[in-house]
Length: 224
Image (cartoon, rainbow, N blue to C red; front, top):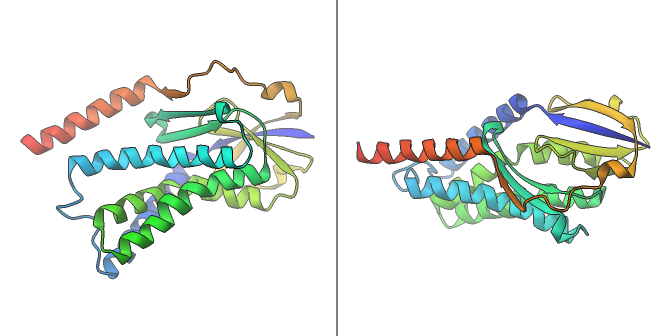
């Protein structure tokens, strides 16, 4: 049994997210709904997008708990300098648990709400859904990568842009353009005992600075 630490490659993930976003915008315009208009291009809507991204992570957390993880082991964070909102489950979990968690935001806040937005002609909900689906790019990549493995467990590495898979399989043979294996070692369960005193919600200092600058720019664009 070995543990494999994966690091996410943000460039290909962001390219995938942008591609999905553009395709969905085109599809929505074809169906007669324009997600970008005077109703959606406002400061409150931009604020809603940030809230929706955090709801995305709450859905991951709900998926972890529904899959059997302990509620107290779910941690949340924002690292905008890495382009990441994240939910972390500080315990080893099963393949079924991580798959459930990965698809929850995509399905509930993405697909279902997009269908509702298209049916009832709701541009704001449609835009939020599209942002969520494109933001779930890494979730989808991880979902399909882990899905094809026969016997694997999941854990965190402690870094928001990394994750660990534990398996008897030789995972180094399973390549992906979206993440790379940065560490392989013999499995030791003591490596995955996490500090219980970690904050429930962690926001990086750079995220605070970026958020403040972003909203200042938005306010200036309104009043100037």
